[in-house]
Length: 274
Image (tube, rainbow, N blue to C red):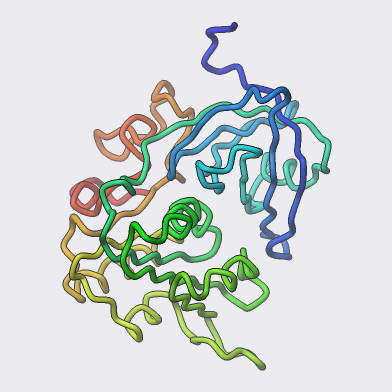
């Protein structure tokens, strides 16, 4: 077996789901490894996806660890590599290496209330945590999920979010009013203020655009959440995955080595350059 840490495993795209249309569309890819030659992962970890001849990109693993049949990656079209991935079809071969990064400490949150706040494609990195918590519903208290997108057409995992109702309180929002929309109109932090959450015995997890994260954290602190009760992931800072290239640094911290999951108590003293 090769000891080359940069050599990916070959994997096949078993299925593709269109999530969000448009120039910055989002597609979900279900990737299988031949002969079960894959890897185990934890909630919050990432993997490097290679499109041969085009390049590679670090992507959050969006499937729960309990799912063994495939790895799920929800990818926004933003550049050369992600565009190449979007152009692929079921049956095409990609390279996958990983998993990289640390994890959300879900096992330490048993018995606690969980508040998830996501925006745009930022739902993908926290989706495995939501799925795992709901699958082990008796281990946790109240579960609340806040998610927002620009328009109703931009809501990813729309059917899956609806299916969560009953196991979790689901609060969806879009940025501006739309005919037929019955949910909240406004940005995600405002929806959180509209439905304030108790910090008692609770943990909050957020991911989305950096400006959204900034105001979500501000609002959570205003509700009484302590720094240690707030978690996020800065997986957008992940680069080579192993801390060799040095481009993942946030101040003195190498996110590929020590992240991408941080509590706000850890993150707030680091340079806000992510």
